[in-house]
Amino acid sequence: MAFNAKEYVHESDKAALGALKAIPGFQTIVKGFMKMFSERQYRIVNLSSHIRVSEKQFPQCYEMLPPICEKLGIAVPDLYLELNDNPNAYTAGDEKPFIVMTSGMINKLPQELLPTVLAHECGHIACHHQLYSTMGRIVLSGASSAATAFIPFGSLLTIPMQVAFYYWMRCSEFSADRAAVLCDGTADKMSTVCMYLAGYDDRIPMAPNKEEFMKQAQEYREIVKNNGWDKTLEFMYMANNRHPLTAVRALECEEWAQTEQFKKLMGDAYIAPKAAAPKQEESKNTVAKSAETGNATAKSEVSKNVQAAATAASQNKASQNTVSQNTAPKRDLPEDNENGDDLAALEEAKWSRKQD
Ligand SMILES: [Zn+2]
Image (cartoon, protein in one colour):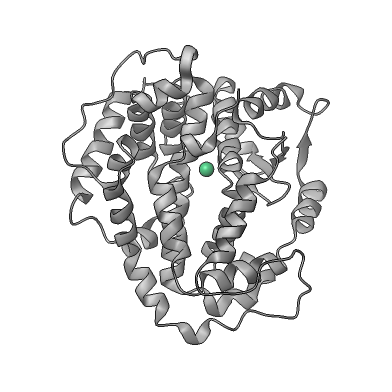
């Protein structure tokens, strides 16, 4: 039986998304986006400029996908290869999500780690991240650059909104990482992928020390705990970093693989981790807390982190009604209301959407 994403989605992911949705104007953005967003545009770009991986095109790569999708309970998405030296992979689309992996990723990682990357991307699909993450990428790319097709959103894209989007997107990575850990049955591969994305390379003639990598993530937690580090500053420093917080992600995976939650989800397939991650400190940041217990405190901490964004956004009400109305709706949405009921309905529809 497939893993149920509701059972492994990271608490900070849920909390950050809740906080993002609470920002005044977010609903307007979602509705405007859904009216304008067209998966056809992506399909055209993918078919015209990328290589579609299939049973007959790079079959060794394609064959990795179906078993992962089966484990995560999703339909097999289209997979494309993009010419790009940056090691990267992303998932986009809404009703028909797809995965794009760059040539840089395939070149950088040993082949045995590619299923882990694909499982991470499939995890985004299983957790229904792709609609908001597609929006988020457009938000973060800025209305002045690649998002020209969505320029009408420009006046809504306040810095607080961008910060909240960024914050949720980075929290959503933890959920997708967990999907990969579940598919692998161990955190070892995912944390190794994180080391590669942080800078390790096979051409470096020295063995990496993963334990030290974990320790530096612990140090990060120590620095940001309590007073934290300003989320706006974090956004400014990290928004353009393709793989932020790789050390923290690796530690999150290693720690989660030692929890009862992971053990229970794995059932009979559970194999105890070979080496324990560094001992956790009593006090740690929000992400660590939520990884371990998923408690309400974590939710309130995350909410606090984007509180400033929500407050600032509320001062921008004048800009809330400026989404272009001149594009024909592509799908029906419930009527506007201030209670978020229509977003709740959207969420409900997403989670109940048939996945196979
Ligand atoms: Zn991701």
